[in-house]
Image (cartoon, one colour):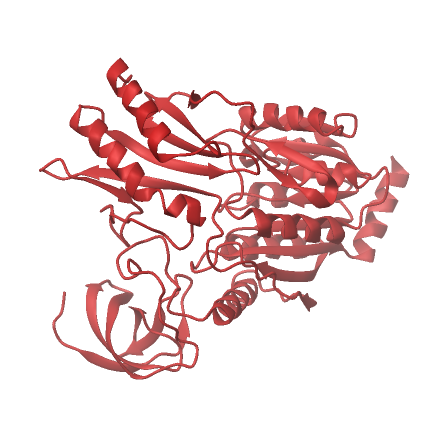
Amino acid sequence: METEVNVAEISALDYEGRGVTKVGGKTVFIKGALPSERVGFRIVRQKKQFDEAEAVAIFKVSDERTVPQCRYFERCGGCSLQHISPAAQVAFKQRMMEEQLERIGKVKPKQILLPIYGHVWHYRDRARFSVSLDKLCRLKLGFQAKKTNDVVDISSCMLLPKPVSDKLSAIRGLLQDLAEEGSVARFAEFYRGSEITVLNIAFKSKLRQNEENRIRQWFDSELSDGWQVWLQIEGGVSQPFYPKTDKTLKYTLPEFGIEMPFRPGDFTQINTDTNRLMVSRVVKMLDIRRGERIADLFCGLGNFSLPMAKSGADVVGIEGAENLVRRARQNARLNGCDRQTDFIAANLFDCTEKTVASWERFDKMLIDPPRSGAYEVVKSLHTPYLPQKIVYVSCNPSTLARDAGVLVEKGYMLSQAGIMNMFAQTSHTESVAVFDLLPQTGKNFLKIKGKD
């Protein structure tokens, strides 16, 4: 780490929210710096192609700078953009998506959608906290520090619902007591549903009777009827522990009259309110006609599948995790959608042209992959199995851009694209893009279909 302080003008933000400048022709990424600012910075890490630095002084302040609200912001890895105003955060994410589409995919959307803003504080409905012990057996509970595996011990978090944030110190106290008795938690996580909030604690080995009793006593003194403790032992499946309850861990999609039960460990969006807005937007984008056959790839629990079915589509959901496929089928039955849905367990990262042909033709397709994207799927799409419309939901603008380039080469137009601020105060971006099959490609499809 250099002690010399350099001074530079910041030209842009990178995808992690760091300021970007050049010194002697070499790119420098500066933590804590914003575009248009003049900052003093110190190099903390040198690499062949670029340097990483931290701002130590700001001589010209951006109008977009704001005071971070969290006392842990400088160290905690849970947030990275609290020093940027909420409106500027959304604008940054929108620019990042557009730049990635143009630079990586070589494409431009015909229309940029208005962003979905969402709440900027207390929006997280699930989170996992790391746990560590120091040499004196003092326990830390929190998120990992930026760029390290060190746990930042926190007593509150402004991204969490206040009832959860207010209990962090009590949860740490319980885990400290259990650690002193010999059972150190691997992690602790919470899930907030519409009826109940679950605290799920993972341990490497089975708890002794006195430790289980300690959890029950702690719960009765610290938590309320709106909570339940689950335990995950030896890496197994999490199970409800205390107290017994008829309440179900679930989220709702009121616009569609849908309830979605889930279990700790199932993938759900961390921001339920913004998820509702996203689902509504996606269903409108698909412009569903009754009886259309629509694929939902990487369907998970059926977050999009069931609203599409409620809107009149015949939906085929495909998902790699068999436990999620089982949960999607259960949710379809619960919501009266089982006749309009079919869920299949398949590894979409092994997708080939033969796989696509085996599905037969879909009228439309929704793709909602993990951060690695859906390259194997989009490269395998081919005539006569090209859907007329594809809606692509992405949590990684760079892989969206890569896959968008492939789809445009296959005869699609990128009609619309926009972002949804699912992860306020962080650099993570949720985006959505609409691809429409161009008429000439459709004619090719009709000719080939006619030959068959």
